[in-house]
Length: 139
Image (cartoon, rainbow, N blue to C red; front, side, top):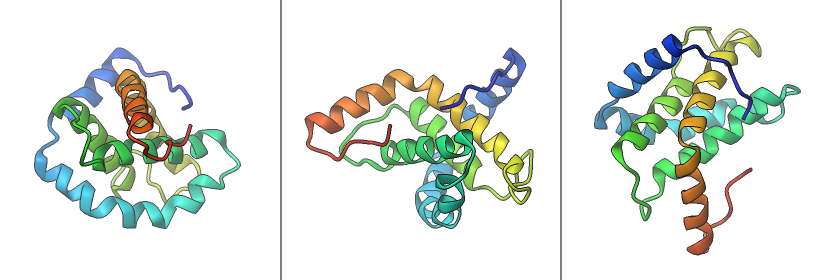
């Protein structure tokens, strides 16, 4: 995932928002993500910009981790995933998604932040998938 330089204040603000995630938010993301992501997937996957393509890949990795019923995820991890995926599918962003490419910058920043924070847990999940005969996650 493309690195976005966030200062400590921005990281702290994202963490505050993650800390406010609730189980109801998780249920909303579980019920809405697939349909809403499907609507933007081709725009992301076939973008000429690597950061936008990385956004799609990162979101799919987080989605698989969230919805895996046989893999236990700590609430703190789950809240981070729910926040990132919820932000991606939310029509209300810091930069409106209706602005081509630029509108996805804040979404990419949030997903990148969460992927970076969960790097070790994602690596553990990848190993678990392999050990349990699951299809590999996108790289």
